[in-house]
Length: 504
Image (cartoon, rainbow, N blue to C red; front, side):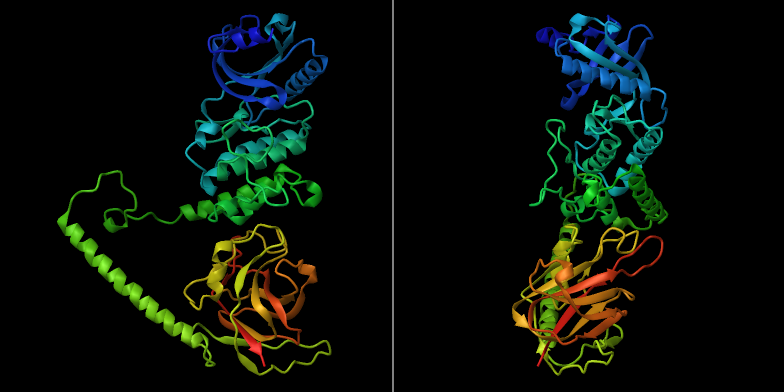
């Protein structure tokens, strides 16, 4: 029987009592032993989407699972939404399917014009704005179905198609018999992850699609850890939708939709920026499909540019040397805004007398400290201690202030030997950022095991924070608990330089 089944399920084959001629296979969902086909309805002369459940009728368990899938699809036929293909008919052996076809059930849905989701990402991940615009209609469909008490089964990428007007749509309905609403939420997050990274983050994905990478604890690596340019909120919601709800996972599609709406709104604001007029800014072209032309004048300009670049590089090296010498001098830095010195009260409410500074001390290493394992711009952390105020480490942009998605974010500095610090001076343009200076016993110490020795609201410029009495330590954390807000859902802070001053 199995050989007969495979002989029938080929392009040109006819199934469903001779009514449906198979045109092209769109994919397969191995979790329910289902094949997904585009077919032609010979009676109504139209294309349809077939979810064909294969198996042996003698296998009672498989037959029961197939019946449950068909029943759930039939119940969902009353639900209409642009994000879901409408179920036209359901077939079972004896009612539209011959018992000798080796098919346990079939869901017939209207055909979705457009392209396969897998073809869309074949050339690489999509920008955040494009991903949100594509995903919103499908997310809205899932949310509407859940309110109606239905489960759609939108948790496999080959069941999704992209419509001709740029929307993701569940093209092959037919949820697994044991699928629950939470599986739709996971599926939505996994599809978002796929759009942003080109990787599939759930079990049972299609062949040829690389799985999402995981960390040492088994959790999926955040998309912005693979592509740092992605918005933190979008990256976080993709990962949290996949996690167990008992450890902070997202429970509903409404939470995902909220972030998608926020990202879409921000993209819309960006779109209002006027494009460069090519007639006025000929030198602004950054992409061309024309072959380069041999141009002696252009070569001359190129050599001049190389010479200027070499001279500029030499100037930067000289300037950097001067900055390093200045870094180890006792004179305060000039420029860059006002310097604010903040004294910390003791437990008795009296100010601590600042200890006499013995000079700056450079950490052996510095890294981004994040309790959610989704560090912001981890590759930029060293810029905060490179003695160059033109470089910086910056947090991701958050639509909501801490602790909406995480309790905070910070920079953990580790020293070659335990040090006792008198003060820390932070150069930053992010006025209003609230920081806590904490000492820790280890680089990866839990936040609750660190000790606060200073707090401050940063000014635009330099903020010197005098530290309370503490034991020498090898690890010092600058812990940001409130970001600078500039309105419109933009909460972000930047640190350009950190100067650690040793106590005498």
